Amino acid sequence: MTQFRIPVPVAGTRIMGLGSYQPENVVSNHDLAARMDTSDEWIRERVGIVNRRVADKDELLVDMAVTAGSKAIADAGLTPSDIGAVIVATCTMPTPIPNAAAQVADRIGVKEAPAFDLNAACAGFCYALGVASDMVRAGTAKHVLVIGAEKLSDWVDPDDRSTAIIFADAAGAAVVGPSDEAHIGPVAWGSRGDLVEAITIKDRVSFVHQEGQSVFRWATTQIAPVALRAVELAGIEPSEVDVFVPHQANLRIVEAVAKRLHAKGARQDMVIARDIVESGNTSSASIPMALDHMRAAGEISSGDVVLLVGFGAGLSYAGQVVRCP
Ligand code: UT7
Image (cartoon, rainbow, N blue to C red; front, side, top):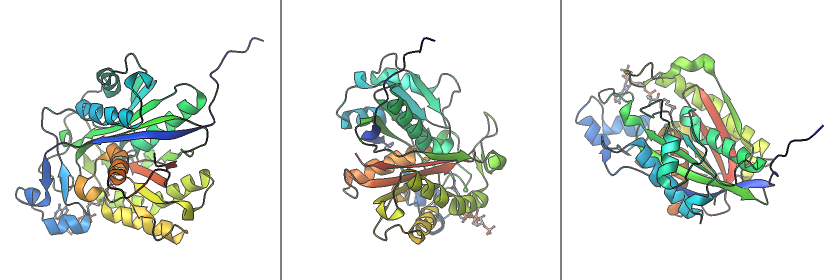
């Protein structure tokens, strides 16, 4: 029987470049305390955020994604014509159709590229990175642009102190390409649809609703095992992880998950992302943006072994080990 031709698979994949974008407008805890019943002290203690960025009305999710994506392509030493596919991880696109990715691809100059959105909420970037890595490894596309972009301010009730203090706007991006060695490990991923009620936007006129405490409990108990599974799938030991970049949901969750990793052998000097302090919770943008910020600040270096783990609405979760570009 005639065999169909398939692309030649490549040995491994790597992140080649990073980029991120945040709106100009900084909203401090004091700004929030001036308009609702909260305080700088409460937010710092319970969530760890000091400032967050919120986009203006006329600054769109697609605009933020275009800027972050363009920076990642330049950082990778590539041009838009080198990009074979664009994935935008997002859960806050204002329109179900059109999606973000096709517009982003066109505006970046990746003409007629396959482009699609992926919604796994705050786990979206790690989901998309896993898909992109498999696409490159299978030979489906040589370079894939992966962007996490969120305009949460479109979906947050500005008067709801349980969500308005947390969520913020941003975009983060990475270019995935081929490599002689595997520099992106297998993805450890899954979902808990039985817990769907924990974070919802019920319909097109509703705001985001979160059962904060139950999500907090789930994240602090169930996410460290996902991260450790990613380490195991990559064939390394927890002690080999140089940098830990979990989704920036709440600083107390970041510290609690890191503590569990330390108990399983992660080094005490493992660098831990705390980008939430100045950026807030930006859902699918938080992980690539934290990586980009940490590298720019010299906190992490090219070649570092970085453990990523995202988690959030769905409930959904995903993690993998990567090397810092
Ligand atoms: O990114 C997607 C995944 N999401 C997450 O991982 C979020 C997980 N959850 C959380 O991060 C936390 O649960 C929150 C930050 C959302 C809330 O923190 P908490 O420590 O769980 O607070 P709580 O909801 O248990 O509220 C404690 C108290 C309540 O008062 P009473 O009933 O004890 O008198 C709240 O009414 O704090 C009150 N409260 C506030 N007080 C001042 C709630 N929000 C505020 C606020 N300022 N902004």
